[in-house]
Image (tube, rainbow, N blue to C red; front, side, top):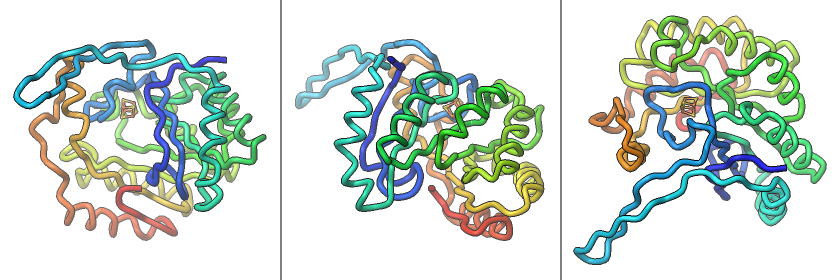
Length: 264
Ligand code: SF4
């Protein structure tokens, strides 16, 4: 079985517990205006310009974004990284893009990893039909669940999709007592407004205590990717996120979870 992947990273420490190998699947139904992985959004092979410097000379080539990979090749990589998982209580994480957009491939990787005794996590926006969501989630040990905007109109405006399905799927996660962490991207004047933070607070409070909330301050590492892909980035001029504000927001969410961390 093959899936469309745009990156695989070993030794990741921000995608769940311990040291992890993260597979980034290509394709996402959302179009978050701050997305730092623009190459993750379209479920197709794309190209970008790539520049190489030799002293003062600059040459340009084309980079291919996305490869159809056999699940067996990915599982081999997981096996090779297994000693690091065992040392650190880590495992594998399927991320994106949106892994739920390639449901058969995602489910296969989760099940096969579990059969190998490897801990599995899925990093998702939660935007998928309830049927697909339920089917895949049951095969993962941990769900990293992104929450962005509480107000549906704002959610549609900044991500291109409604948050209704996302909130339904979040409540389902809680109802089946699946282990999950909430992840909140802090985007200046978009998700970090007082109104939105209070809205997210209410949503999480209704879940009646969660294990962990990770707040993820905006960074502009995706900036050059937009340029290379010929796309416009709405946050082109934005600098690094204010660390004092991250700390304030962390304190704000502390009553809701056993752990609240900055940066995952
Ligand atoms: S959900 Fe994630 S991958 Fe998809 S557009 Fe938003 S930030 Fe990018």
